[in-house]
Length: 485
Ligand SMILES: [Zn+2]
Image 1 (cartoon, protein in one colour):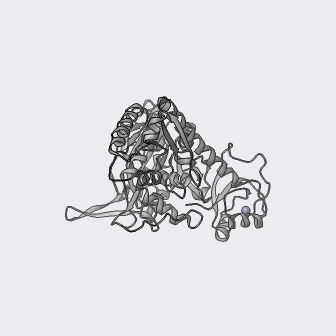
Image 2 (cartoon, helix red, strand yellow):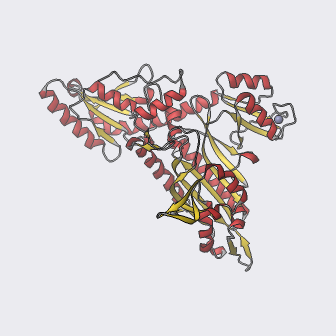
Image 3 (cartoon, rainbow, N blue to C red):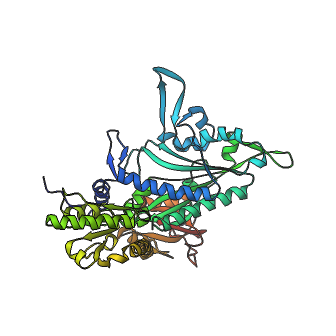
């Protein structure tokens, strides 16, 4: 067998490193269809854990799941003018079916507003039917030209929420509620703390009044737009004639929202935590949280360590996602390498010496890099210690990500030369005053490839916003700039 090529280090080529981690940790593979990916079992298991956590959050706030068709009649998509204009370049169209030309071509959904609203229009009659809080787990097709596994693919998996409300205030509350849920999920589950805020007018979702986004900083200091929540105003209600009868008997258009996160989050997870050994996973999203590796030389030792390993597995099972790697086709070193590369947070080694000392040796994945932390645990304490260790590792990853984000955040920058210098030497999130002109952003983008990510929410905004924009004009408000995926 040929020697396997080592993972390209992050410092050498971040993009090659990312692709290497995705391939080698068996998250995803390339498909025969350009721009599509195959999500492999290890990657899909992470997505399922994400789904489960998000789904519980949605249901706890009153949302219900439903499922709508994959195909959208082309004429439906054309009903909301901005919406169709925004999505037209990315649309895949089915023109033949059953061996015949279709009377009306069908769009494969790039998002589902145009199929959901005509249907929900029938479900909503009066104010008693509101709010209508629907979520869908589905696949989406957007004909992207440049694709990368998880970050941008032709077909991807996501959830899309679609809600209807009686007033603008209610729709706005919903939009912000979901933005908050996304942020909580990214912080508490992914250990990937995003900056949240509102998008500029020209960077909104096609057909929205307001778009809010979560922008997370990756290890290369680029931003990843990780989730969006849109207040759609009455735009879609007018386009699809979605009205309700008020308590006073009047007929009014509903106010609506839509919001989504996708398998892109898996890419964000990789780029937030992983290292030059491979994948690093926050324990809450690790399909395998603990792997037990028995070590033996003689047959006698084998019998004893296998028995101890099986017992340890049954002790941890239930509370912990644990795997007992008792394969005798691989030596322990090869097993260590495989599970480290796949990001298993804790490895428990049991050898004859550990049995003598009545202990197991824990090795923690996320304290990796040069020296990995080894920790002997008395056999009787394992069941109590392991959950604590996993919690500490989860917190440790969040702390590290926060620290990294703040170390590469620059506030109150007013000098454009300084701005350009930061962007050309490592980059990061730069907070500046902003004049509000689109041409101003275009120039900065041409010069530095950085774009405005959001107008930051209060939690992230600076105490004093510079009164000048980096173009020298008067600032209207603060914005966050970064290069973005
Ligand atoms: Zn400006």
